[in-house]
Amino acid sequence: MDFIDLKTQYAALREQINARIQAVLDHGQYILGPEVGQLEERLAAWTGARHCVAVASGTEALLIALMALGVKPGDEVVTTPFTFAATAEMIALLGARPVYVDVEEDTANIEAARIEAAITPRTRAIMPVSLYGQPADMDEINALGARHRLPVIEDAAQSFGATYKGRKSCNLSTVACTSFFPSKPLGCYGDGGALFTSDDALAQAMREIRVHGQSGRYRHTRIGVGGRMDSIQCAVLLAKLERFDWEVRQRATIGAHYDALLGPLVKTLAVRPDRTSVYAQYTVRVPERERFEREMKARGIPTAVHYPLSLHQQPAYRAGWEGRSFPAAEKLACEVISLPMHADLDEAAQQKIVSAVKASL
Ligand SMILES: Cc1ncc(COP(=O)(O)O)c(C=O)c1O
Image (cartoon, rainbow, N blue to C red; front, side, top):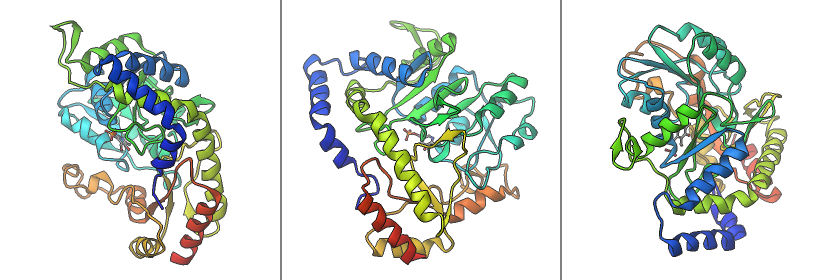
């Protein structure tokens, strides 16, 4: 059994994907070819954001967002410690400091009520992560941002396809960053990512930063990066969008089914009633995780841990946080484990996984 089955998805979309890739090979515009603009238009329309800027990866999207917002050495960005390292990594890379705020134990997302206490005169942005595919408390976070005149960056690397109060993730804040890493809910066949905003000036800045800060050919008006997304990767996503709505519905159904079957057995994560998760990961909490992992493996079920340490415990990110505790993040880091999750997971496979969970506890 695959943890994420990309082969069945490819089989269902083979003709469309092959034709789209062939079209790029035929026209030969591998960099910033027509597929890039087409994808940006489709994704902007899909999310409702005014602008989409396709970039080289989710990590690059975070970097470009922070650069466009002017984050510089000595600044602080408030974020969660319970996330993939890239969230804090891009803040640190710019010489700024990630300031951690603990998460809610039941959703694993940043606890909005704790953010205000972390804001200082050096704070330049708030960066919630929509972890495992569920948006954080965006209304509360945006209200805080407005009150303190701080932009809000949604790290939506895992949540493309989710909704919050009927609105799409990636259209919930000043700017949003997503990832098209192959295993993500909308994944290409290599690295890819995108930025979303409805702020025209910010979109222009992000477009310039993506191509070495150029406002015109060889006119470098700001410091940028080489952060473009390839035409071939955009072509793959254009084909994948053809069944993406179905995949989002499938993921919701499979996630709800897991909840119903596993709820009596293990601690599942809560999805708030005013939002949906796209279940980039379907994650539960178990005691004795190492033994559980081994038992699942012995029964032929792959699992993964997202993430085994909170960032304030990671060698590269713990400086300045020694002696500080983020109890919910630390507890989750010890207990979380993700089960196979993808749109093509059928009823029989799900039953097999649930039986294995029951036997492995
Ligand atoms: C929360 C989060 N942020 C950022 C990233 C980085 O995205 P990418 O792998 O496309 O660079 C990821 C990817 O795993 C992620 O999960």
